[in-house]
Amino acid sequence: MDEGKTGISFNLDILLVEDHKDIAALVYDYLENIGYRIDYADKGTLAKKLASENSYDAVVLDRMLPDIDGLEVCQYLRNELMFSGPIIMLTARDTLADKLAGFDGGADDYLVKPFDLEELSARLNSLMRRSNPVSNVEVLTVGDLTINMSTRQAERQGQPLSLSPIGLKILTLLMTASPKVVNRQQVEKLIWEDLPPDSDALRSHLYNLRKVVDKPFNYPLIHTIHGVGFRLSHEA
Image 1 (spheres, rainbow, N blue to C red):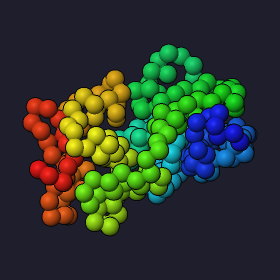
Image 2 (cartoon, rainbow, N blue to C red; image 1 turned 180 degrees about the vertical axis):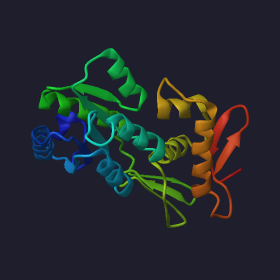
Image 3 (tube, one colour; image 1 turned 120 degrees about the vertical axis):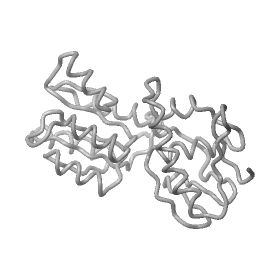
Image 4 (cartoon, one colour; image 1 turned 30 degrees about the horizontal axis):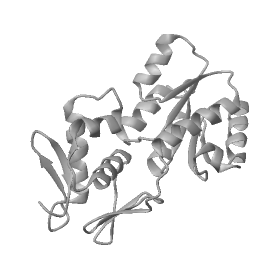
């Protein structure tokens, strides 16, 4: 595999959710052969269980599952697990309404069956590049807080921090900009691109981030600059 052509490092973890055994086998073998690690679920309930117990870089998700709708699984990943990686939805439904429902439910892309495996791979690679931009910085450090960009593990005072994918995105943005202020619109665009939800969503993510990054320690690093945005600094 020539990684220079794709701009993405493989050995990434994919959750494949597809109840059609033949399609699942073809997709599984193809993605595994080009370097992805694959976990497989043939039902929505199993997919939700696997996603809650493991960390995945992307999800390939069938819309029509035998137990629950794939759209419900997609919404669970986004709303309950705060999964921020790419989700590609596979479906035999090709109406505009079905596609819009998939996007509204949190899917990043939509492939109608039958589809070409090379196209699936190309779309997956493209989405992965956007969610995992290449960086020469291996470790971000501000005060006693660090993020290892290779493992995506954050630590403060040597203690590992358990962050949601969205929390990690916000923290990475704040650390990269530190000590400069990041405005609210920049944070919203990072998470939701051009379709930000109501203001309570960002407030909830920041509350949870502060609870992990600041509350257990002697002094806060995340500061709200009223009317402007947010700043991460070891100085108030």
